[in-house]
Length: 374
Ligand SMILES: C[S@@+](CC[C@H](N)C(=O)[O-])C[C@H]1O[C@@H](n2cnc3c(N)ncnc32)[C@H](O)[C@@H]1O
Image (cartoon, rainbow, N blue to C red; front, side):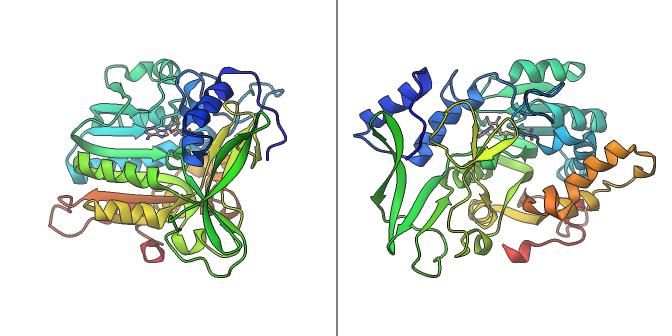
């Protein structure tokens, strides 16, 4: 049980009501969706500052966590080379970015690609960041559009940085050898973990009989299936932290991967301080790859972020970079920072081939592709 009493604020009240309406228990995925996306109240649905380099109390600070495009513009400039190749191979001129945050990545890509991009559409289920993005992207105003859901048909190159980890997950708990779904109930005015017997299972059998908490990702996999269904011609690049299935469901990873972020600190108590912190889970990249493949996409690459960025030429021109710039670039590729935990997975529609009819191997996976590990 969380040690924090429910605050007398609107979001916890709303969630408590939802628990009551559902008969006293909701799945963790439902709780996470309400905590992050309740219109006007959820963490991503309010306009507090989330992305940035520094916590509050520091000059220029006030954010909760840092993402790659906030660390260094070289992230987006380098990714843009991959985007340029993908636009050329698919013969399209539109980029679709999911969950565009502060607009930093969009700006880096639009500034780098110039006329190669005719339309840049930002898709986010929460519209709270739109004003900030509009201001930041003012120089490209004629090209940028916003959508709150996927259109029925799409062509172009799709991009999502740290979007899959923000999609609600279901929690599974093996207790005394028996699988339960872990959800949320109310006990003496507080949110509390509550387990119910379930037929749901992790995609891999988890060796051993020890108590084991983990997640499954029906929403992220459903998102990929919808994307596959709507994309007529194009490629998809998704960057996030996570692992292939055999690492995700490793017997020793017995506490799951749910993590909260606020003011550049992390904790694991998702039931406390709802609405004022981010809730995330790592990505099961095997599940994402299979969902895409089963829905008709080809998986065209999978590797670590560090390897991907180096393949795309991250270090070109670094000779003249300042020390501060070098330090940020190191963070993007170092194995103990974002280089290894973060992965890149890419898909293409089946009609995408090189001009000579051979299979397309995107630039970012030209060395060190790890599709075989999925
Ligand atoms: C961690 S933020 C990533 C921000 C940004 N990409 C960056 O790298 O700084 C996750 C974003 O994904 C958005 N998101 C979550 N699920 C989504 C979905 N199904 N469609 C579009 N956006 C989604 C959230 O609203 C949030 O803005």
